[in-house]
Length: 477
Picture (tube, rainbow, N blue to C red):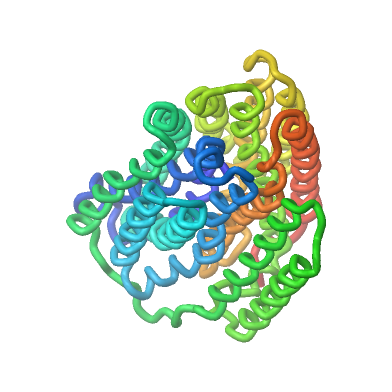
């Protein structure tokens, strides 16, 4: 999944937090700076690594099959542990978990920068994902709990704008660093950002754990991680080998079994579960979750392949490939506010149906990227249309997610939606394992099929909104 979109799918976590006693806290500017710096670690890292994949492949892995794990090693723990990371902050203190997560992310970034081989790099990426699962929800929880009323709206707006800017600058800066210094430098840029976030958090952010919360749902978190991990490994192996052997099917089955046990455990825990199953009584919540999974899956897979194809098949430098992606965050940042106002007048359902259809049209236009040609006639039109479709969908999606659950579940609902967005990218990247091993004409042909599949998945996302969203009561019983 592309990092420029993370602010849009994450901002509902902050918006869902209960009102604070005052409009703005002491040291409000420094608290806001802390949340921005901590969150930007994930935003920058997610966008830069996509551009760095070809250089990493040349340096560490001649077969390139393991490149999918450079992305999925990060997305897997982040997707599975995002909600439990937020719950841990509520119990033990948000500042404490923010600092722990940021320290872990920084240490993991250093490991990635020094990795002597692919296994060490993937291990570092897994640790980065765990760190991000701790720092992201607690950064946003601090933001949501520290401000109220209009001050909260302004703070979330500034946070989202800076996050979008970081996502826009990230690929360009990362591409330049890769071309001039080398791919290892893209992990080293995290260290000063992490140091600044930790220093500000310890100086200005109060550590106030909430009282009366249920114990952490560790069983749910472990089962979710096991289910996602097994299925991701199986899908990656299946994609790379172009067929499913007995081992692949066995691991895939084990992942599905773990998912079934997860559902049973969550059902037994009831309202104390990491993911209360009562949320799924809302047709809106079901439809929004499916839409998010499909839409971010379609986009995440395509945006991994676009810079990879431009570098490997069309001779772009890493800097040029990073610059090629700029229309996506820029158009979304400029258009989202207007699209949000339009959705306020029309309701969430129309833009959630139309937006993914526009994204599908952009995926069809991306078929032209397969052939070398002018950037302005091939890459730019596709990214422009995709950006307009996403801008039409992300703002009403945030509003609809918060409206789909009862007040006591809005934090869980928004956290799950953020996690499911990353899961969509995780599944898409797992299915690209074989494509990232290809070169030349074979890579271009596989990109064509990926673009067609992405368009079909985006249409399915639109259909899920049409069928489920706005058809019945918006709140889970």
